[in-house]
Amino acid sequence: MASPIPSSSPFTRSVVDSMRKIYPEALADKSFDNTGLLLEAPFDPSRRQKNSVLLAIDLTTAVADEAIKRRDSAIVAYHPIIFRGLKAITLDDTQQRSLLRLAQHGISVYSPHTAVDTVPGGMADWLCDVVTGTFQPVATQTHTASQSCNSKLYSVPTYPQAQAVPTAASADASQQIPHIRSTIHPSPAASIPEGFESAGAGRLVTFNEDQPLTTLIDHIGRGVGLPGVFPLRSRNRSRLTTFASVPSELSRQWKSDRESALQALHDSAKQGGSAMSPCAEAYQDGGVEVSVSEADRPVPIAVIGGTGLRELPGFTQVASLSISTPWGEPSSPITILHHQCKHNEKTVAVAFLSRHGAHHQIAPHEVPARANIAALRSIGVRSIIAFSAVGSLQEAIKPRDFVIPDQIIDRTKGVRPWTYFEGGIVAHVPFGDPFDEGIAKIVRECGHSLEGDGVVLHDRGTVVCMGKF
Image (cartoon, one colour):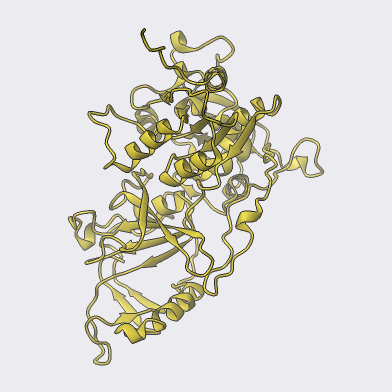
């Protein structure tokens, strides 16, 4: 007797059907993207799984562990875990290992990605709402799991939270900016389903009057829960371009256009599950549980490794991210590492970037410093500990000693691009205290606790930077 043909669970099929109705796959940019049902796990009636969906931006090892522990039926991940065709599926690759484990536990994976960006009311329109002051954040529940910390060295982790901007019903409704918006790169007519006629990549916002750039930046910072964005151009502030994923056609167009273009950094705009909120709302009734991943959080701490430091021993790698920025590619893929805190047994996420590249192929004057910092910021990093191998001009500071600098003499100007503020953007940045004293204090405490192991740490010093850092 032939074995029955396996299929996914009825609940998973319902989730996929709903996602395809909300974000039609025909609207995704198939020139590079990979959307849809990426992993269809066979349904086993004897396995007790919940009718629940876990929403995430990236399907990391930590997110897979979370879904397995929760016994979810499906994961909806904004970014596809599979971008290119696979010649083999093995346990050696961390992403493929996650897929195999999820299939083993009956958990399917769906990715809408650029379909979310192009649909009317999707990510591009959400960014327009933020910029123009018509955005209201989705109410989220604060999870007690992240509210306590027993560590003597680390504070309680904090995550970006969107703040309300004025609405028509509020007393500050006058702060809403009158405007007209249009689609920059409409989807091909043949691919547009009924009801999605205005779909396409990117939105052009034309304000009735010129707007102060600070007002737009303030709206974006409050909307995405992060106090700052990176301006790309600023010649005519009556027009603004918003985007989530950037097709090559738009990249070429921006190089010649004169409108003011702002980028609310790609992943920052989606933190907290805002990209998936329509999916969550679609399942509020009927005993279905939809949750935003607790493991898929911004990574607040980063380490930049210099010569001789291309990895962090003792940390567990859970993901490797290839990120593009308006200033180019960073020196290397960003590795997401997990470390178990000895004080409270909680997992601490750390991002690691190799300054000179994965194979030490980037010379000091070629280090893409702006791209490195922008890429780290885009995943939530707010604190950076950077290592650099240098020579000493002080006899007391011997080879292999560590120094925590408190001042810097910068001799890199003219050697490479060195500022984000150009093309009409003027900013005055204080340089009297270039290093964060709060982070330095923590590093001093940790470093001095290791002095019995042969570590020599100097609390202060001045760096003369010739071409990297």
